[in-house]
Length: 211
Picture 1 (cartoon, helix red, strand yellow):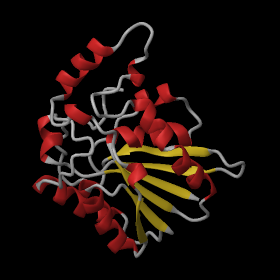
Picture 2 (picture 1 turned 90 degrees about the horizontal axis):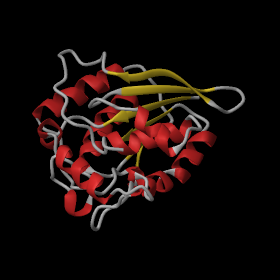
Picture 3 (picture 1 turned 90 degrees about the vertical axis):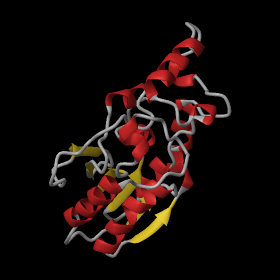
C-alpha cells in the first residue's frame, strides 16, 4: 500500500507569511496553477480514495487529483490545520514572539495555546484516529492536508513523537510518498517532492511552522 501525503496549494496568506489556521481562504492564482500541475503528476495513478481536510484550500487541491485519478474524495475535518484562534492572520514572526512570551520552563512550546486556539499537542491528539485508519487502509491512498497538521500526521505514521514533527516542512503541493512494509511500518520513499512544478514555486511561510 502506498500513501501520498500532499500539502495544499499556495494561498495569498502563504505568500505573505501569515498564519491561516482554520481561516477558510482559497488558493491564489499561483496555487491554482500548482494544483493543475499536481493533478497531472497523478496521471495514470489509481487510488482507492483521497482524504482531505474540508478547508477550501485543501479541497481545491484535492478535487483536481480526484478528477485525474477517479478516486472518491472524502472530506475529514480532523485533517484541518491547527486553529490559531485570535492569532490567525498574524505574521508567523509575531506568532513566534507571542509563543515565546507564553512559554515557560514548566511548559513546552508545543503546549502553548493561543487565545481561543489549539496547541500543537491538541492537533497531535486530533490526528491519532486518522493515523490508525491509515495503518489499516488496504489500497493506495492520498491525503491532502496542511503544513502543520501534515507534519504531525507524518510523525505519527513513522512512529515518531510529537517532537519529531519539528523535523518536517512541506512546500505548497509537495508530495511525500510512503510505502507500507509487510510488517506494517511505513517506509518514506519521497519527501517534500516539488518536481511536478514546471516553474520554481514561490513559497511563503508554512502553516503551523512554529512547532
